[in-house]
Length: 362
Ligand code: AHM
Ligand code: MG
Image 1 (cartoon, rainbow, N blue to C red):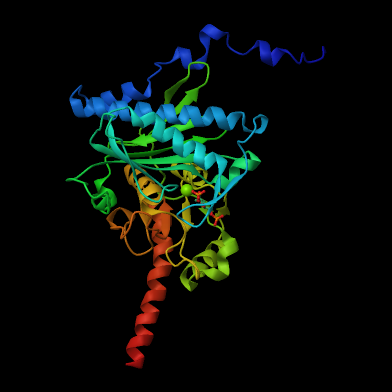
Image 2 (image 1 turned 120 degrees about the vertical axis):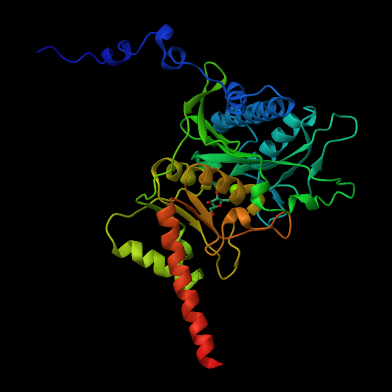
């Protein structure tokens, strides 16, 4: 028997002309948006252009992340604290500015609102102004940046309603059902862009050799149940008893497994494809939880509903929640319908017990 040739595997890779991405249809993101809308109307062109700009921001952020360890001033903190009371990372600032610079001259948006800015950024008067608002979390899970683990960017598009002359952006304080499009970019082993414009959920993978996001998964459907539960169990004693009940249940029953990566985008991505549930419940210190409704929970809720799953606060559909302020937070239970319902059942059970106790006392 001859020894295995270590180069054999490399030689059996398809030659460049038969590369998988060149063999297939190579549906680009902008073409996909237009095909989804089956129109070349002004609205369809705008949405396609918006998605192309988001994709450009994703490519710029992805490029910087891929070389972060080799460059000066990319990793670590700036020393500032943001409007959320969280320490700002250099990548948070960079990614936030990337979205602004990509959209400033686009003529597509009138303002951008982000987790990293106290108030929305209004397109200056000397630049073309559009009718959409981009809401975004520039780097989700930014504590992962310094250790080279996956992070993401989350985005949501809404149309401006009425005038916003006083800069209060009050029209953004509406339910998540007002979103026109939402999605995220996952910076993992590949960079992927997942989006929905209310016609299913579709995933694109960045082919670095082409510099293009190419369609890789169309009409993603989340299974009705999955084995994964994804929650920071370090907060166990900070939670309401109902969440502890749920956690005890999955500990005591076969068929569950825990996965938690510290970046919702990554944890959500697994559940979108394979099912299960992600939770960020309220805690004693933060009864509304950690995640921001407009920049994080509502866009993910838009996606999961489009994929046949559910997103809930525990007592209400996330997409029905009306935020009181731009940076409002809400508890989040998101994923497969059956798994979200299971978490809700424990919350309802404790709530019934409390009501019964109150009734007995009165
Ligand atoms: P960030 O957007 O400021 O990075 O915070 C959001 C992240 C989520 O991606 C993740 O699920 C969560 O915070 C992790 O928080 P914790 O460390 O409390 O579990
Ligand atoms: Mg985030």
